[in-house]
Length: 504
Image (cartoon, rainbow, N blue to C red; front, side):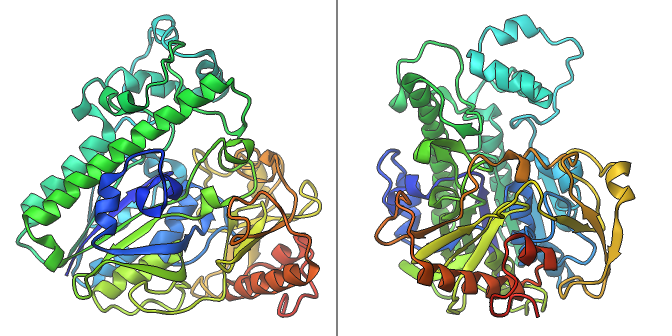
């Protein structure tokens, strides 16, 4: 068995033609859909970037216990489990978060890995005295404000100076490195290749030819990086931001097409599995918001694309059962007939198991649940005063270690049922925690508990007032929390104590 896993970042399901999208031509995603299994009810787990990847690698949700952080010593990472069975895993990625404090244990789980430089704020090129005046005059004022607010983003202005030709773009280099792996290992067996690109994550930067079909006539300086939060841009500014996202999706579609050409040219369909997906979506003005993290977890963010080809069971078909990102790890093991560890809550996509519901969320925010028909988003009544704790043996945030002030309040918590009898540090979260205002409770613009009917109201425009259905969804949520051994305070902060099975 051989496997290729393609992972995009922030790829909107509703933009793809095979999922009903019409704004951006996606001939290669559509071409893929004509050949493979297309999952219609696939959802996120933990968000954003690295929490999502922890779910993917371990088959277990992390957002109930931990914010953005490394893989833990007790985590089951599927590349490592494959390696123990003699199966070579190779990661090609331009996702620079793997090389920060909060992601530094992920890429080391693969046998080999290749890092392509230059995406977003990757600290890549060393200019001690950058020509700031010249660089700044290229960009729209809103872009400069965002960069000034987050000093690490200044690296992007420098990186972009070194990305001039199409071949220089990191996503193009990622796929090229993947093709080189395929050429070198075409006759070998028992390998998994992960081609992972940050695109179409913001900033939305693509070669000019991909932008041309979406040209808005904009002349006001580079505008391709929306601020997270409410849409406050002029209509022409919002149009330009969206056009740049469309351009990067078009680039991703072409890169996928080159991979499909490889499959066709070398008849890889007969002996190579293929999985294509993303970590989450991205709001482009829907619900009057840009991006993610700050608002309710709408379908545009959480309902994501998934394509799967199994050479032992080929053929195009739509799959209507409820699935989640935690299902990827047991699926990759199942390609080789390896039984998933008991700590994995995900289910192999190769088996037709049914789910009652799935939960998803950001650490410290709402707990959200869907059964594929309704979605329910329950926020704490008192976000500022809620008790939340980080459970970890790897005390790092995105780009820093936990502070000594944070750790002074840490205590030792008993093991959870997925930590292999290992106790954990229990670190209280305060407003001084670096994640608090980034994607934690301090950054929320919306915090209203809501219930939606996804069949009658797929756009989630009309919250329901239906106590009986809300109770049903609460009970489904609690059963999923119990299955993931949620900490006691997760029930307390959402006032779920007393719900059946809430706290045994």
